[in-house]
Image 1 (cartoon, rainbow, N blue to C red):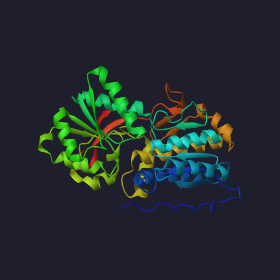
Image 2 (cartoon, helix red, strand yellow):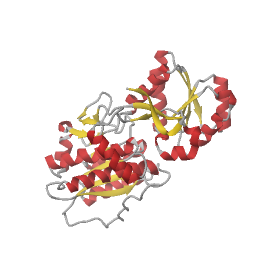
Image 3 (cartoon, helix red, strand yellow):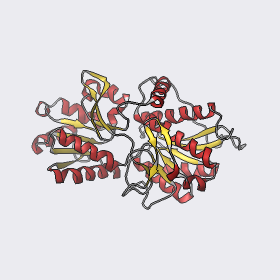
Length: 373
């Protein structure tokens, strides 16, 4: 069970005496958001804020997070960005869900408010190129192409995707198809609006698929699909995968036990952490009372970047936005610098390390690295 994180401040309760430098934090902390991901993201951000303040703050002023729960609701996130801008934050940071981050990014761009997106990967984070938004997580096209290469290397060419309606899932399916088709792979779409988990099993048999990717929410219907496939003897040789990273979190293991093992997913960590990463991992493990996910490291790195920008360029929003291409920060997972990556409309760290990992069937609490890219 996680140790409690710091409580959210109610609207209007933030300090207004000008003594603190404030950063707005967008995190999903309640359903239907993935609350566990939000807790890890916030834990990383809060740890970094504490270390900044222990080191003297920003020009002798304390750094303060103003936290808002997005609950995976784009409109709630847009309203939070408006509120945070009015409260005088120097920048906005965070968010895990791609569709929510896209709405937050559009609002930040419209308001002229710097936004450092921690975790969301959707390539089209904004409709048009913007100077106000930067991102730490790899773009979906980068990570999911690496995942597609893993599938081909593991011998899978007929790949079914069980997908729910979403811009994010549709984008992922398109990336997989575009990358796999020239290399002899076939992507078979299974519409989860029309299929039960049992019907998914029948489709896998009929389509002769050797892999099933779970492009669906957790716990439902992901848990039900996994259990149905695991119990169908016809599908003993079918590999399940979850490129979006659902098995990264302990909740997955609690929901599925041994059934949740051997389901490869994307994780944005190096094979070996450097000294900073090791120190942060130890502190995060103590804070969370469990192994930190890559999302917790993304949270820490987000604040590390913004703190350096605030020290170097002050709290003026326009000066901060102009500074993205001059960032050079040692993060937990490597040197962080931003550039204009082809096809990406925001300032992008190109790239955070990418791994394909799974939970070891012999010990589901242990993660195995299967592929790196």
